[in-house]
Amino acid sequence: MIDAQTSIEDVLPLELIDVSMKATSREEVLEAFADMFEQAGCLSDRAQFLKDAWWREGEGPTGIGDGIAIPHSKSEGVSKTSLAVARIPEAVEWPSLDDGPCRAFVMFAVRSDDQNQEVHLLSKVAVALCHKEVVETLLTSDDPKTIRCALSGEESNE
Image 1 (cartoon, rainbow, N blue to C red):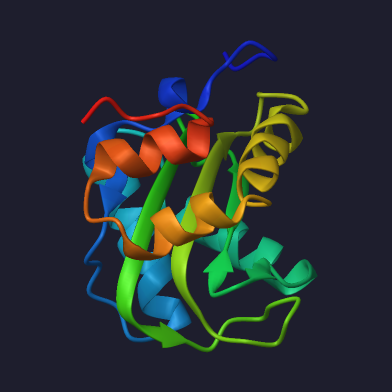
Image 2: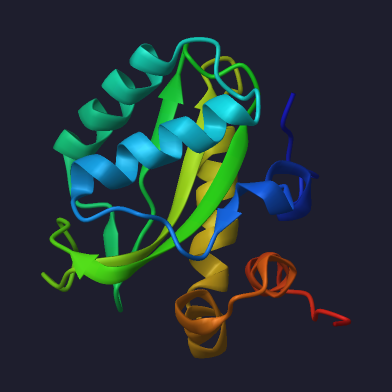
C-alpha cells in the first residue's frame, strides 16, 4: 500500500526507466508502458490498465509542457502501484498545456485501492518537474539512476 511516506524510489525501479523507447505515436507510447509494467509484474490486467489510461487521457491533457507528459492510470488492472519513465528519439503529438509535442514521459500505474495516492505521487513528480535541471535531466540523461535521483530531488552519487 502506498502512503504519504512513499518515495519515488519506492515506486520507480531502475528497470522501469527506458531512455530509448521505440515509439512513434501516442498509442505506441502507452502500449510500450503497458509492456514495461507487465514485464515488471505490476499489472494483473493489461487490457484494463490500457482502457483506464485511455479514459484518463480523454479527461484532459497530460502533457505539462517542455516536451514532457505525465500520463496516469488508476486501475483495477494494476497489482502494484509503480512509475515508469521513458524518452523517445522524436517527439510525438500529445495533448499538452503548451500545445507542443512530447518526447519524455513519466507514467503512473496506480492500484485502484490506493486511495488518494495517485494525487500524492503526481504532486511529488510535478514539484520535481518545476525545476529546469530536472526537466533537462529527464530530456538528456542516459543514466536511469540519475533520472530517478532527479525526480526524487536527490543527487546521484555516480
